[in-house]
Length: 408
Image (cartoon, rainbow, N blue to C red; front, side, top):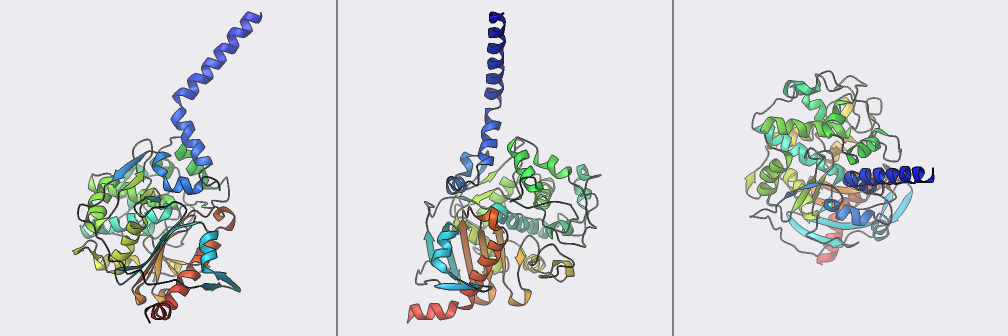
């Protein structure tokens, strides 16, 4: 009898070992995902995503755009948010800022790095990836590959009988697809966290997008759904016959003149994580801001049309405007994958969770880019976006005064 139980125990151990060996990559990926935002590893993770997940490589441009540097600017000492005064330096520290870059009239006037981030090192963008996808959607639009009122299922028939059936492309660009989706990163059972675990265990990004259901009439209500951008990425692949890595390399990395290598995180089918998987250096993230600030022209080339830039930042429809809470689930305005806090002020920004930003203030010819690993994000939520926005707006409003003090 003992011998029989011994053989059964040995068999069980062998079966467990077999499962572990043949699923080691999946188990490792899931483990990294579960611990991705933990305080003791978040900084290292954000700077080394290519060691945690499968990636494809973007190679630095052979003709990089090297911006001149004149590091004469010292940022503000403090800023106000609601009834509180924040120390600028202490807030950077509290949000575990890894890089801060300020560009004025195509010149770098302030650049600092901390928490082991290097100037040439790539860092996860999270949802700033969405603005890069939007830029490539603009290039495809300029090439006549689709029309904004085309139905997504005209180009992607595999999305028929899903929540995306007959949704116009422009509605997807504006996060107005009507898809029901809970994007609360602090809720373990939210749709976005279920998506993260599904991705970690090898599920197809496309299959997950096809599983989503419609909750509202498309084009009538703004609701942030990261999978909308994933669908746009799949559309770009269908329109061009190239994967997103090839398109990003050709249409952006080479054309804009990116200085450093980057990466796209991919799923088990080598489909890029369009909704948040782009990794790049702080300088190269900021160059997309420069592209939009300069009406689509950069590095001596018209990369995307001025018409597309204007469309991207147009929030004339009620449900896209700031503070239209009767029409929207968010108090910031939204264009084509860009946030627009106050249309009259003219500023706009791209943002990723855990406080990644590229903020543009055209009136001051100013770009502020920030990379962070704020482990408090899950508990603080969207309030960190609003505090950062207050900080950037204060920096922009006091920009000339501070710069004058430095140069005198």
